[in-house]
Every structure is written in C-alpha cells, then in structure tokens.
Image (cartoon, rainbow, N blue to C red; front, side, top):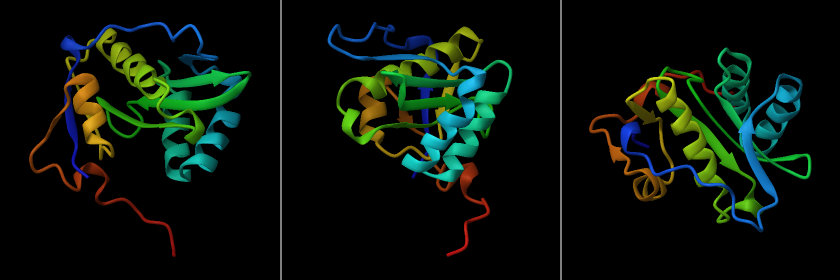
Length: 156
C-alpha cells in the first residue's frame, strides 16, 4: 500500500452530522483511553490500538472518537507513529457508509491544519479512492512499503 499526500489548505469544510445520525465525533477524553483502545484492538488490530494509545495519551491529544449511545463506533488519529501522518482510522462495520469515516477524517485533517500543518501524509492507505474523492489525496511515488516497512511483525 502506498502513502498518500493531502493539501490541508484545500480541505472541504467540516459539516455537522446528518440530523438522523446518532453519533458524534470528538477528541478522546483521558478516562476513556483504555476502553477505546480495547475497542480498536478488538475491531482492528493490537498495532492500531498501540497507535491510538500514543495519539490519545500525548499532548496535544491527536485521537478522535465517534461515539453513539455511550459506545465507540469509530476512531481516527494522527501524529501517532510519525509526525504529519494521518491514521490509523476505522469505523464499526455496521456504521460504514453513513458518513462517519468522512467525519473522522475531516476532524483530524482540520485539526492538523489548525496546528499549522500544510500537508498530511496518509500512511499505508487502504481505500485510496475514498481519500482521493473526499480530500483530493494523491499517491506519493516510491512510498511503498513506506515507514511501516521495517516493523517488527507478530509471530505466526
């Protein structure tokens, strides 16, 4: 998977959730970091949970949650493994296609822009078409395997 580049000075505006949405996107609060990280690990991977903990436990906080009915239904973060890098991000399977992923992405990218970043890298992106369509992301030539390429892998 290649890395993507996003111009933070040309982002679409933030929008409130649709009126029928039962979820809200916000920064994680300290007393919910463990519970949220458990959800990330169970839904996605322990490596993503580690990145979430890093982003949630730093200052400033660079981790966002989507919450519905007191439960985590999505997350996104930046500056977790490398400065200026968006991700990881994920949405509960039954919430995909509701605009939640877009809301989490834009919350993070607008936060990065407010902190003075001009560009963001989306590291090892999965759904390139989503990022290209949503924020005009472009592929970075020669970025595969990227900075994640030399990671210690779990035992099989």
